[in-house]
Amino acid sequence: MTYLGIEIGGTKLQMVSADAQAKLLDRRRFQVERKEGAEGIRRQIERTLPELLDRWKPAAVGVGFGGPVDGRSGCIARSHQIEGWSGFNLRSWVASLAGGLPVWVENDANTAALGEALRGAGVGTNPVFYVTLGSGVGGGCVVDGRIYHGAAPGESEIGHLRLDRSGTLVEHRCSGWAVDAKIRALKSANIPSVLRERLPATPGGEARLLGQALAEKDGAAQAILAETAEDLAFALSHVTQLFHPELVILGGGLSLLGEPLREAVAQALPRFVMEVFGGGPKITVAALGEDAVPVGCILGASSVKNQ
Image (cartoon, rainbow, N blue to C red; front, side, top):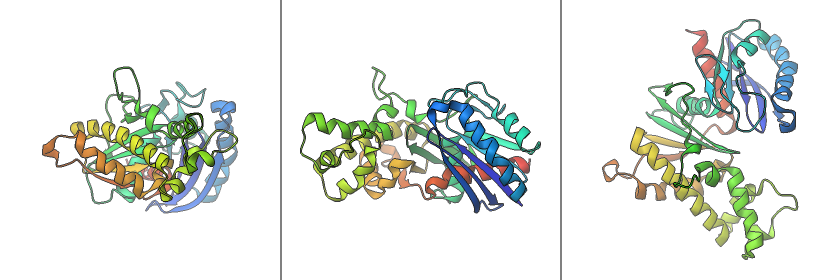
């Protein structure tokens, strides 16, 4: 038996097929053209989905969407990055394209959390909290193998936690775009740094320079990492106080920094949590990489088929 998964993000669209064990068999990956809005993404899905349906003949479809979702109705609450999704019934639309197959729809961070908890870095731990550090910052909590939901549209919106009373959000400090801005600021500050020397002519994507600069023990890179990790650890302390997960998984593009990021967050977190929690949960890096959302989609599709 096979299943289809669709990841709809702010910068990429992925469509995959997988077997009942969530082993990926086929993939189509596209860049999202933001200026074309939701209509552009829907056109890409309409062009590609029939081929995958015909080839794999799936039993159900799972969708991970980049924004708040009402999982009960399948409607999009809103997209923080792409215009034209608010109020759209994604479940019924995908079902109509898929000939009435069962369709599971979830927020993408929740979906990635499910994939990592059951097939990735979280296997054997419970509860698991996942935070994705990409173009934005999102989160998902998996308890007893199931996504935790609050009242609809209930998501673990860690990116929208406030770091102070003035309204500074975690997303303002810990997203990929926030790190890009910190690196760009080195230019005007005239701070000697290999990061500053390697700034691209066209702004954007500067965070990808951070890993090599850290490997070279660049002082500015180390300061940016420490600041970002401390802000994230402070946010995770609230998660710890409320839910006390056994494990926190760091995912998204910034998690590709690997051990330097994991260690920095793990060292900062104990300062912010209750002493009785013994320093807080274990911190690890996502194991599935860009497959976290697709794998979660397949697990979701499997669950809705078996209901």
